Image (cartoon, rainbow, N blue to C red):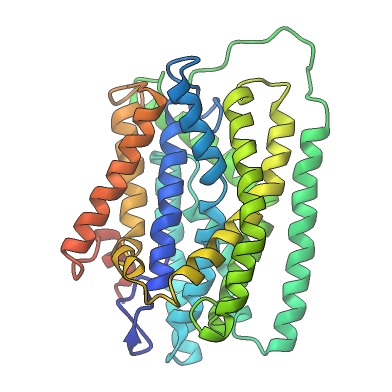
Length: 378
């Protein structure tokens, strides 16, 4: 998820990207925790438990409005930004070889995670989409701007194609509904679990590369450009970031919260699903951008105390991400305890895990996570 070197180009790590990474990971953990008990065939935020409970509706509305669809683009943005930060002070061939090595390790980790742990793996997507990004980010500005315009056009086309899919009537519409196939919580043998998870992972990866890949690449490219401009940390940009946060943030937040309420009320209705998915495609990414601007502005370029407090967790994001997937297997999968907790409880457990990881990272800031240590090996 990040360049996990303790120092970059001979200078200390900037705390702001790590703080943003920690916040984005909280969104990923909560969304995954709510959806896992009903994966892979259920709603992305799971079925409300208890059915009709106000606590479940409020939890789903808040998670959908504030977190769903925001963590992944922010992490992609930080992926590109980290590439630029890690390349500072390195020769061209050195940074190329280092980038190739890290992407290979990230890809192998992502495939293992996607096949054996959680089908909705983002590491594979980032490794594949970002494979040609490194050299692009170090082009002169004129060709880089042209490339950015092309990437934006392709991302818009991918978004429109995905939206168009939701406007096409579903094949077999009007036929009697069939019971859903068994999910991860229903299969109780390791072989069946891996087979179901791996099949879903391959389908998910193909669809993600086709429709989400161009958007993820655009976010990575934007992050790399932001790193070159020092957009998040230099004081020359601070006023502009504040204007973006103040002008775009409130209306986007209100629209996303309204969508969150709609998802909580109608998320299990197949007739409402296309409209909700289209609204999410239009609203999630702009709010993610506004969140980045707001956090960067509020952090005073990364000098705020809360920013430095969050940074140690952002440096251990891989270990927390994979560890949470393993915990979901133990708690919610059929080969584990097969629990189906109340919606608010599942969200609370994920948040507590995040807080525990934050406390451990702050207590032992010099101790790298095992996966970060592996990624940093020469």
